[in-house]
Image (cartoon, rainbow, N blue to C red; front, side):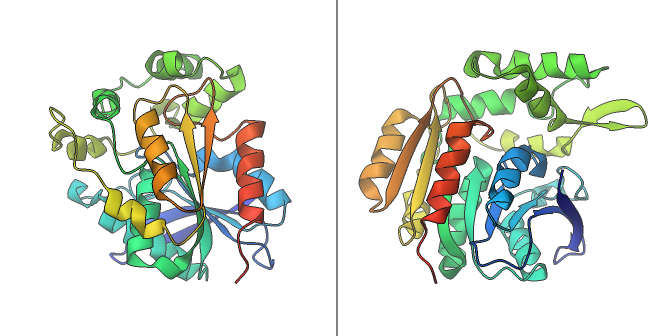
Length: 288
């Protein structure tokens, strides 16, 4: 794939890995891709290639403790304020003053936090299967497997593992898609497959009281009201309800909704419909 890897120091010295697609010399809007809780930059490979082919510079970081970034010796620092600071450190190092942000799940929460912390950074936001209300059912499902999956022995077993977790919610995925999902979940080290994320990520989930709904985050959603938003929901999502999805469209003056059939939490953004919708949305963003 046509990307460059960078290793950038966070404010505390921890090394963060970043994929960069496309040329830094372009008039097109730069795009910042932010992955889900346990995911990493690899998830955006197909989308990033497509956007780079249209002239965009695309940046996809691995959060601390994910992908090729360093693990944090203090698991308490796997939280949104620290990760937000990391993302801004990456953008500063790569001289990105503003961007369109594509945020999947936790990445979408980070995008909303950006709107509160540094609203001028945002050119537009793609929220991929996340909103201001997180359904407890979905959080319970995530908490049930994060940090608890037995490492597979082979890639075929790895694919079977991710299918066992997500197969019911993703009946539309191809064999290639399942392989990509598995390759973003595990990495091969010394001939052994291991998790692509620090298992200590489960600590933060264990601290949540999932016996009752979490407080709504409408104040953070309102922090991105000043920019256009493309809101994507997987048809079978258990984290973003249709009710919340509809309420987002009612509350945001410039929101475009997109439902992805045959996928759950979170749509992989590898299909033609998603890629075309995101590319067209970014191309139509107001110039600065």
